[in-house]
Amino acid sequence: METTEAIHKWRCIRRFKQDEPVPEEALRKVLEAGRRAPS
Image (cartoon, rainbow, N blue to C red; front, side, top):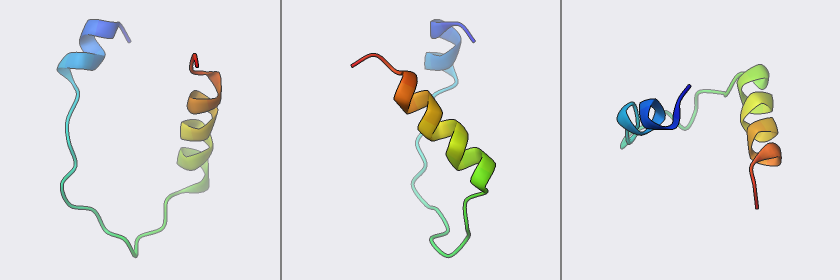
């Protein structure tokens, strides 16, 4: 995904379900992306 595409697809989440578990695979992908992000 290009940077400009990511900016245009950005959206805010105002409501979420706290009691709905996050799939382990999705959590792993987010954590891996954060680990690889520049500091």
